[in-house]
Image (cartoon, rainbow, N blue to C red):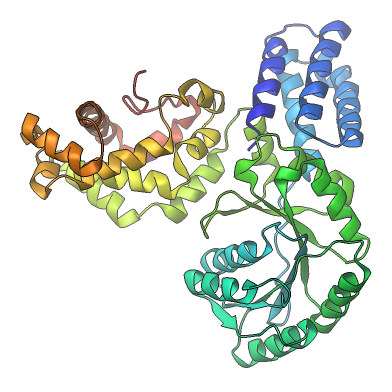
Amino acid sequence: MFHSLTERLSASLANISGKAKLTEENIEGTLREVRMALLEADVALPVVKSFISDVQARAVGQEVAASLSPGQVFVKIVNEELTWVMGEHSDSLNLSVQPPAVILLAGLQGAGKTTSAAKLALWLKNRENKQVMLVSTDVYRPAAIDQLRTLAGEADVKFFESNPDQKPVDIASNALTEARKQFVDVLIVDTAGRLHVDGDMMDEIKVLHGSVNPVETLFVVDSMTGQDAANTAQAFNEILPLTGVILTKADGDARGGAALSVRAITGKPIKFMAVGETIDALDAFYPDRIAGRILGMGDVLSLIEEAEQKVDKKKAQKLARKIKKGKKFDLEDFRDQIQQMNNMGGIADLMDKMPGMGNMKNAVADKVNDKQFVQMEAIINSMTPGERHYPDSINGSRKKRIAMGSGTQIQDINRLLKQHKQMQKMMKKLTKKGGMANMMRGMGGMQPPPGMFPGR
């Protein structure tokens, strides 16, 4: 997300960040470029105007004039104003009510409500340790109920059965009664997609809302629709008492207009952002962290939190003990590292969150991508256990067999073996220097591991 906006803003702010003195002329030139970058990112015009005006007022004030590094202070102001536009701080769900807390999801058809319901259920189960039940009141879309049942199974949460012959309000009321019986903490109600101009459908969701009295009414919106996402959310907010927004398909939105427009236009906070198709691809929305990513400053806090949640600690500790004992980092270990990286969203997502790395993505996009990691895993899977443990035993005839088994070329095998050797050296260095803890502390100046990007 934000790739094109990050590129434009980074380029325009780089011209001013080193200035020892800010003049009206260089401020105006940079702000003109920032304005164009925001408009091209499909940020709503009123939001752009207000943002530029606020930055300009602060940039020509005492705050910058009294600074020893005005250029850097200017970038800091842009960062703080971006954070303010998106909501200053993260707004968590209000679950401090008598259980079950009801969360109602509303939105247009195709926005991703059903998948968001399951993602939210898994997030609440894993992060908040809640007992969650899902229910579908979408009696109009074929197989909507079946889809949510399947997703509930994937998330390993409770599911309340319903069928298309029932009325949505009856389904929701019955689900709430059953949730109380089963001592469920949170009941998530998925609703049918509807247009705000459809009077009958809006009347239906108002009655539904009144029957279950949700503590959270979240509007699910496709971030790919840009500033239209904010306008649609505002239209729904005039009819339903929305408490927040879930932005879906954020991983496919290179512009970021929705994230920068929703809060300013609706006054409602973005609470979550769906960043992938897998059921665990849901992040809490932190405006300050997102602002840092937009300006290419990275997001180390989210990276560390994600590592805490998704990295297999037992495997990591086992590998650390193994390397400390002087044993070699073999191809089985290499495959584990590839799988851990995929669990954390792949190389592009990791680069987004590493300080100073966001702008490198395009430079290495043609040399490395997640498909290459899939290929590397396939190559390792085509080896025998002995070959994985003793890579030096892989001779020419073995390479031919492995290439045939993995659908790759011999040069792909050679490249992987070279990268493995470089990774082996890096692991030795990390162990000597104090391991992953030191690496995380030094992440501010972090560079990609040697050999991670083929051809560099």
